[in-house]
Length: 170
Length: 200
Image 1: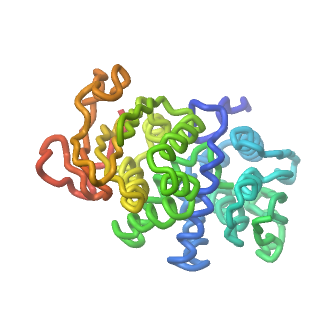
Image 2: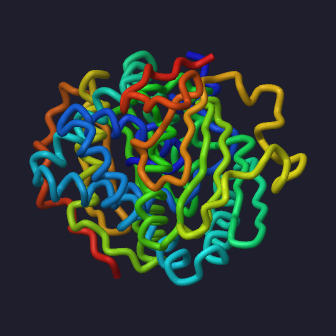
Image 3: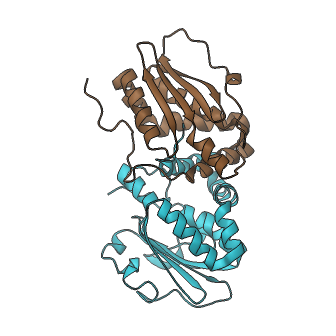
């Protein structure tokens, strides 16, 4: 299989994104949580994963684990301040987020982070992964975490949201 | 993870999601409450505290940060921004993303309420193709928008050959995203939901 020259679904002219946009992402979560509650916020994340990110699902479905690993390598290379290792094995893809660029930037700028911030990674990842025949799990959070992607038929425990830490501002 | 590299894509998608859940009023509330009063508090602090000087500092920093093609000029009681290559709208056009009828409305959606509180009004036009201009003046200053090239010289985006390549939305001494008038009928208000942009 030849590697995808551009694993990301959307491209930009600048090599990394503008980190101040993390403030808008955090503010968007807070707004939706205030208006629609936790279930509404989770629905937003699921819809975002299933619809906006549907081109990602298509790439993962076509390219399997290699496409998942390539996606996250390219993704975090475009996120300013990210420190991440991506490992691909026969069983799964593991994304070790040593420094979450969003949490770091929000803290550096003294922003109040919505406590459920880190849950978005699970709900969006799962909504992208499921149509591609994979399932996602997240443990940790609040600045560093471990995200795994298993084949959909793998016998892995269901996601326990208690394994995702609440985000704090310091 | 939701990233900042494609922020403009999921930001624009979110307008459509909110519009579907709560209609146009919810989208307006989002721009004011989440963007103006939460995300952009750094802009708010600068502009509420320092007026035009704060605007110069904020937009010089943020447009440079976003790698925009832009020019900022100012005169007595006026600051003008010519957006020659909007990185945000440009990203959407290049990637064929258009879920919400007029993405460009979001700027007036959060900047308008901020200017209103700070005591300024806005003259503004956008052409839906990544080009726009803004002039902010004190609300007591009833001067019209500058003539072509008067403030920005050769950087005046209206002098570009492709300025009229898209339908132009027009605002005069406004602070409200819904005050727009269309180029085709400048004396008539536009619909809140004009036809969605189609990528070239």
